[in-house]
Length: 275
Image (cartoon, rainbow, N blue to C red; front, side, top):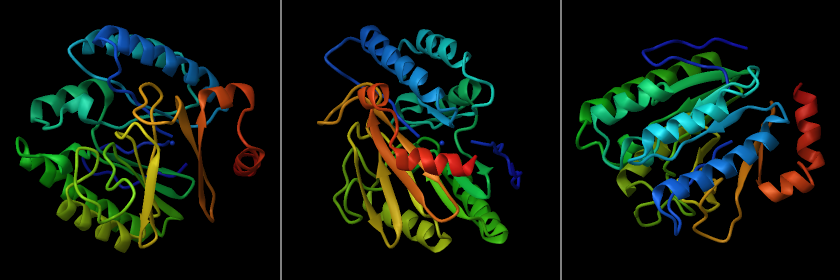
């Protein structure tokens, strides 16, 4: 494992993503459903001894939800690092310093970077790109930090640069209209160009509760559906990502697929070669 340049945000050593939002259930029952689904996925996923991304649902029942989720996660094999990506249900659609501070106290930094085997990963707080009107200084701080991190990546000549953020840059087309599930066009364009110039290969996001994605000048935008609530035709599942020296391969699996068939031989073979 490699160490990375440290700047304010701690840098860790860690990968997949999924979360849930509203169904025709009230808050406690909805979270209970999502938690059970997550626990089932946790049992399937950790059996592969791969890196696990955990994301939580937040609301007025936050304390109870955090306790229940942490009770599951504390049983994770200590060899499996956990990475958390903040989203709108964690810090709000319009975050404040207080909501971000509360998140950081419970789950760690809202943006940070880490290295795995020569691959550089960036975890961003995309809510600051969606609406930073109540904490503009925090968005500015993330922008400065990101520029510094991209300079580090260029200096170290990493194999790949991969970004994780909750809100997708876009869902299918780089020039699509702005709505709740993507970033505003001018903000999006600036980020896409920055990522393209930095040589970033892929951005992995959630938020949409459906699978989607597209590309911009060699930058792949991957949008993963949810472990819990589905807003489209996808089923409860998770995305498996395998990163090699040459490429980034990913597949979305339903929980039923993982339980009955497991991962495809192609991905298992790729994982075996990495170990």
